[in-house]
Structure formats: C-alpha cells, structure tokens
Length: 99
Image 1 (tube, rainbow, N blue to C red):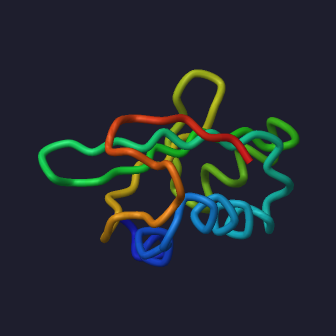
Image 2: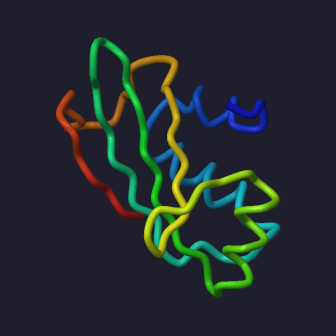
C-alpha cells in the first residue's frame, strides 16, 4: 500500500477517515459521494472506501494521482486500519456509511 495512505490507516474514527479522504482527493476536484464499508475479518479491521468525483476527468486524475483502483463506476481504496475505531454504534460487522 503506498505510503501516502498511512495517515488514513491511523484515523481514530470513521468520520475522521471520511474527512481525510475528502481532503486527500480535494486537489483533483470534489468528492460527490463517499461510501465506507467497515469490516472485521480474522482480527483485522478494514475500510473499503468507494467514491465518486464531480466528473469523469476528476476521477481519472484522482485515479492516476493517487493510484486508486476502479470498481464499476466508482474509485475504490482498501485500507487496513491500525486500531479499533471509536465511533458510536460501530460494531464489528460490516456497515456502510455516507457523509
């Protein structure tokens, strides 16, 4: 995983991760949709971030600039989270959230 994502892995909460993803993508345009799926498997917490930018050109630039993958019509970023999140009501089961 590229080192530019290290700060995302250390986010203390889901809301902090969402804000950090918006900030990371800002140089390429605006994030118009961000869905985060949280999962715990084999003792490891992961965040799957699915996002859409304001235009196809912004998505292309973000994909190239941040080395993101695409999944269908969205960009995707998979992160291993370094520690349990402190968000209220966040259970170990998968859960999708939008800002």
